[in-house]
Amino acid sequence: MATLRVMATQYYTATSLDGYLADPDNSLTWLFEVEGADEAQSGMADFFARVGAMCMGATTYEWIVANESPETWRGYYGDLPCWVFTHRDLPVIPGANLRFVSGTVEQVHREMAAAAGERNIWIMGGGDLAGQFADAGLLDDVMVSVVPVTLGAGAPLLPRRILSSRMRLVGVAQAGQFAELHYRLVSPAEQG
Image 1 (spheres, rainbow, N blue to C red):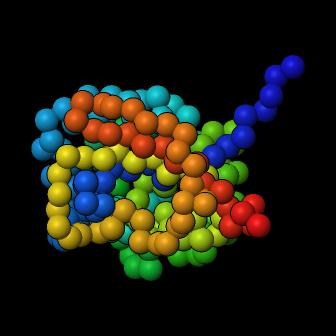
Image 2 (image 1 turned 120 degrees about the vertical axis):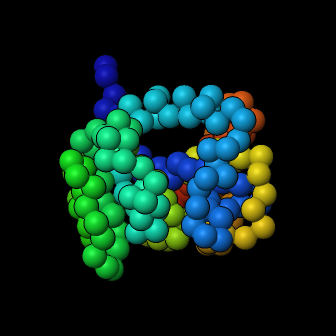
């Protein structure tokens, strides 16, 4: 008897060894300068094949707009629906399937889940947005590639207090110089 696959909401990102997603200027250039970054990126195809919707914060979106072409967006994400959480007007990437929103994560999560169907929701960044999903009990997985770089300051990986009682390590892998960690989260309601 076939089992219906349950969709998961996953925060999948890269972080410096000292826990930052971006440097103090909100740049990600340090990530792409690491030897073996292409090898680590190759694992994205398997992850991405299971994604039915994605979201990101305004700062992540602005970095993409400033540093990638519309062709790069289409090459990476195709027509995948993307929700961008923002409180200001942002430029539109031509050809991208975008929705600019400012509602609560609970409300938007329902829309993303409907669009994703049986596939996963990817929270691309940033850390505070992922934290809002965790606070609401809507974050199932934290999947982090730890990069052999220290930044000293910047945008934190997950600026929330989430204790080990809510996290279960379910996977560890190596991709080049990157250490990939996969934690499953227990929602606050399940925790008791």
